[in-house]
Image 1 (cartoon, rainbow, N blue to C red):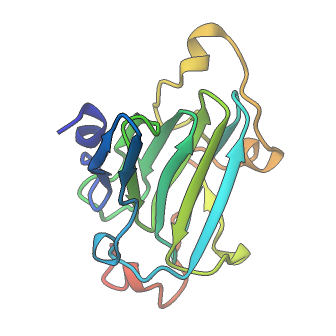
Image 2: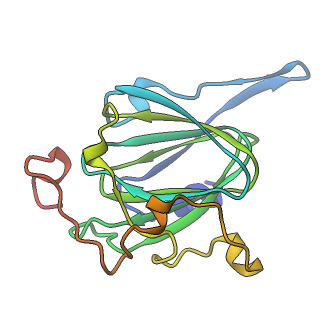
Length: 187
């Protein structure tokens, strides 16, 4: 188990899958997704790009699972368990994802997630729901105890106004909508 996989497993229901690579002097191939690997039905595929120095998140959904895979570049992932009844509530982790060691990350509803682009980056998101702007929440990237690499150098990340204005972890009011399937039992 890699250090990244170990870090991801510290939050309940998060899974970082190490993908098996087959290759030789001509190149390589690996499976990036199988239906049996996700605890949800895929309803949308989204592709994203970010330039080096971009910080996104930490975003959170009550209805949507995410499945991330890096295509090019490197990113530092940050996760924070915002689910008050989770046994890992308040735990934050970070780890790198890159295409040299292909992995795929499953992020459940209620876990805030974001990334810092170490290099120019392309990634694929598989989502359990079609994009819904009413299911967009989050927590400030600098309020959950993650050691982002730019903090040591005094650099400021390129970040959206929306993400700058997210509540801190202490200010976050966790309130799934009535009937949110993943929180029906109070988790």
